[in-house]
Length: 377
Image 1 (spheres, rainbow, N blue to C red):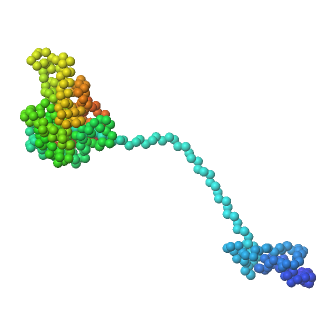
Image 2 (image 1 turned 180 degrees about the vertical axis):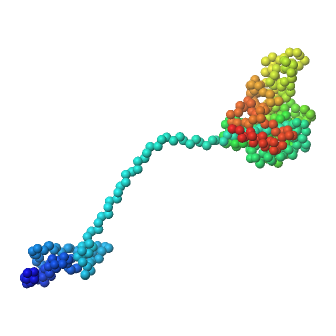
Image 3 (image 1 turned 120 degrees about the horizontal axis):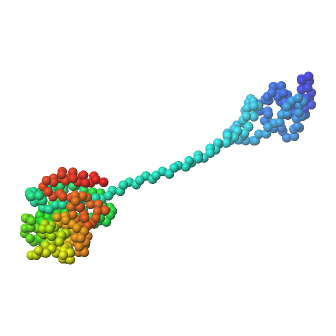
């Protein structure tokens, strides 16, 4: 029956093209696939439509562009219809990217700010000497070799060396000053400051200051030692390395007080000369004020510059009353003892110093003492 139907259909076909298409349709029904290359052929212009076969699926030719898309080639003869359909089907779209929700920022508890680094506080050790000679003697004269060994130790330990202007800066806050420093201070004004200290200071390029008793200029022997002359004092003041400051005019002595004891004259009411009477408060103030004024005048005449603002109390004996009288004469910085360091918050009316000028204080002893002082908070 099937062959009879096929024969009748072929006889009724009007063109070769129609017969070909009918053949393809019958093969699709019988085998389930079409010959490769035929399913994509277009009908020629003027060809009549192919009637649907009874009991068979309708076959519609797929249109193809004249030029295949880039990256594709036309199917070759012998390729199955399934492969052709796969090749011409549009590529599947990639799955949409999964959008991850933004991470939730959890609020953090307030953290305390890190404490700022501790700022280095400049500190100063004022080293006190009196006399330097070729050899040590007594309790206050050290040898030049001992003095030089101390200077070398101070340099090796990394100390800076202060001038009087640096002391003023330190007590004004100390901004920009080194953390540890020393100042060389020589009391009384002995001649060795010009003959022994000045050459060594030049050799080591370190400054030093002499707190001079100004009345003793040009005296040959005071306290068993010669003092500097006016010429030597002026040479020191003009050296650019050594400085002069005050140690009183006639105040480096003791006198009898009301209880019969002898005490430093700048801080005590003393017995009047050739009298049994003790000076009054007014007389005491006038005497001490005059001594400060005379000291400042001599220092200015010697060219001491800012040294006329600096004063060391004889015997390190001070009082608030004496400081007030000294300020009236123009002094602003007052030095005592105390074996302590000078800091920015040190009272300018009571600046401590450290004893260094004794024969038993070697470079090693002084080194250890300074290390202990600077190790303190």
